[in-house]
Figure (cartoon, rainbow, N blue to C red):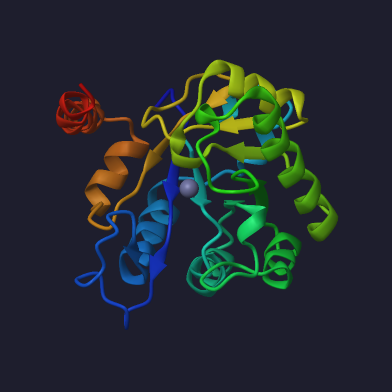
Length: 243
Ligand SMILES: [Zn+2]
């Protein structure tokens, strides 16, 4: 395995909530998440992304997996954090600083506790908006305000950022590096190679099986081809509708 795969979770659901009534394809049940962690702990090694914050993907990261969460949902603390902590598995949580303390989201005391216990806190922008739809000044504002707030409230450096909706281009990645972030994460559904400076992440869905998870981490071509094919199929009607 000569690649480094980073996986991306969003909201987790507790057993009581049930996935049947939830229409969010990204929402993963606590049972599924627990099984994923057992798979990772049994067969692979989870490594902290922040170890790469001063440069490109290093050789000793290849073959391993990075775990991330987007959006700063309350389930990051209520479900993910205890299960990760119990197994000593590191993860990075990307938060929108404007949403902290709102219903359904993390609050600062929980974020500080997660940070003190070794979890990394990164930015997902100040608000959850597409950075590609803004002018340069506004992008700069989203990147720098969120970094400053995290560092003030948490007392630890915000080394990494993930772009909301996975919307990015090389100018935005450069603006993130200029704002002082060492790591820029996309949702590009691709494994990363030695020397890469931008980290692509693979989405985990509510129906992602243990087998698919293993296939992603082992960078099995069939899984990535299928994902690319499905992505292309979904984008066809969108393209037609835009015309
Ligand atoms: Zn998001």
